Image 1 (cartoon, rainbow, N blue to C red):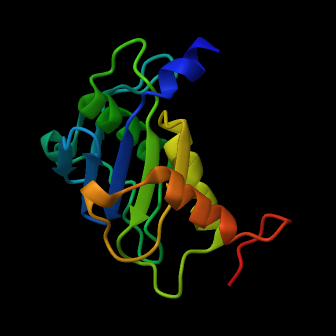
Image 2 (image 1 turned 90 degrees about the vertical axis):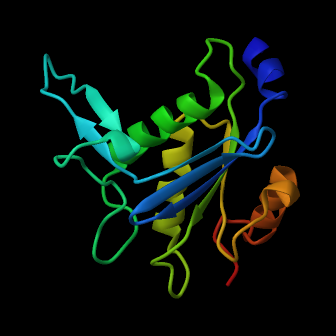
Length: 168
């Protein structure tokens, strides 16, 4: 209940994903993380693999969770961890920070549109990274000053049939 009240004051993050770049923008503050989508993992200890570095700081052994020959998304766990780290960097990572609403916008490898599986994977990626709600957006790049999460969410909901399938 307290978390719900805190979340009402949360911001919206606009996440644009390319194979070799990830850009996350805070709509309220205009803070931006715009780097390579890389995560460098350390040596695993007791089934825990620590993150050593991410973004442009990652070394040559880094993993890119958004690099695959056919689709934009290749490693769910590493992608989720990368978004968590980026969200914390942009939002400050305070204990009672409101969870952001997130717009995820795949910027390439979308010819013919995203499949329902890809949309679900991107949505779950954002939720797992700490978002309170996620919209997967397809189309021309959005301008920060005009992003309205509620409107995008309603438009997304209107594209679904009563059984949850997307209207073509």
